[in-house]
Amino acid sequence: MLHRLQVIARAVRRMLARKIRPVGDATAAAFPFNAEATLSRLARAQRVILFVGTAGLAGWLLYKHFPVENVPRGDIGVRTNQLTGTVTQFRDGSVFVLPGLHDMRVYSLRDQVYRPEQVRQSNGAAPLQSVEGLSVGVDLTVRYALDPAKLATVSKNLPDNYAQEIVEPAVQGVIYKVFARYTVREIFSTRRAEIQQVIEGELKPRLAADGIVLRGVLMGKVDLPADYKRGMEGLLAEELETQKMRYTLELKEKRVKQTELEASAEKVQREVRAEAAAREQIIAAKAQEEAMKHVLPFKQRQIEQRQLEAEAEKQSRMKVAEGTAQARRIEASGEADARQKLAEVEAWRLDRIGKVNAEQMAREGALVTRHPLLIQKTMADKLSDKIQVIIAAPPSDGGFIGAALLGSKRGQPSGEQAEQQAAAKEEQ
Image 1 (tube, rainbow, N blue to C red):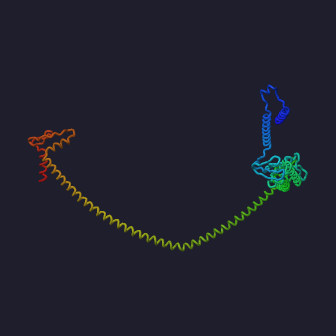
Image 2 (cartoon, helix red, strand yellow):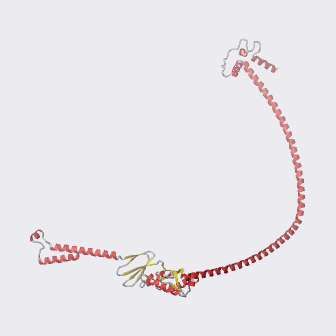
Image 3 (cartoon, rainbow, N blue to C red):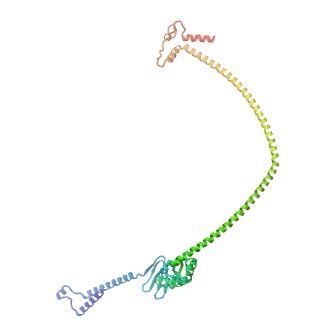
């Protein structure tokens, strides 16, 4: 588009130079043509298009070559300045990388594992060879990692695929040479740990020269040819059986010696226990004899003490009996006095009650004498609570008003007269 605008601008300039109008006279009269304004608009459009194109190109370059790269966790970034050759290391985070000036490479610091597949089987592509010339397959595991301290120095010469170009050739060069020094039997059973140490000792300096740290070499399953493997297994089984028999015989000899030693120890223990028991009996007899010298006087003193205690018990019981008899006499005398006092009190009480009753009767007789109707009222109250009491004048003969109800005969003394007669008799 920029090229088209430039072509249009050149055409307009040529038209102005020739003073040729682009349309007819009528059209020119209707639409006057301003060349300077048109050129100004074309120039502004050209600048805008140039700016937009430049911005788009810059955005595309930033999109394709963003100047910031990220270093993941556990990795390390190595930035190399193409002008000065300065190498800078960066850990986790973002790193400014200017395209054309900086070269950024990211390496992993995690442990990596290499397991050569061509040497795992005895009939594989490139099996190991023993000192006898037999093919042997070994499951090897090599664990390694980059050394961050040497990475800045070796990063310029370190290939991108250093595992295939450095680690694998170094491992293969060492393991073929090391296994060729040992027999199949040593590889299979007796010297496995030694082979691992030898491989680590020769492989570590080779990898260290390229900035790689060897963590360890692990030797796993050993694959032998089928015929040799059966013979080796039989031989190992016979050796194991021989060793087992030897250990069994040694164990039986040790058990016999142990039995002899235990019998001797038991004999000595019995003798010692017998001597100890005899000594204990002698000591016990002597102790008993010595004890009897003290026991007999002690028994005599016990007998005397018991006699004295019996005599004291007898005296104590006699004193208690005397005290009990005296206490009973005192109690009997006290009880007789108490009964006499109670009799006197009872007689006084009866006498007093008689006097009180006589006085009460005298008062009641006087009251009845003054009010004879009280006898009738009292008799009516005693008969029933349903009887209504009627107070009436006494009879003309001075008798009891209720004599007719009681069935008393004329000539018999009334209740008041009888009481007066009884009171007179008592006074006489």
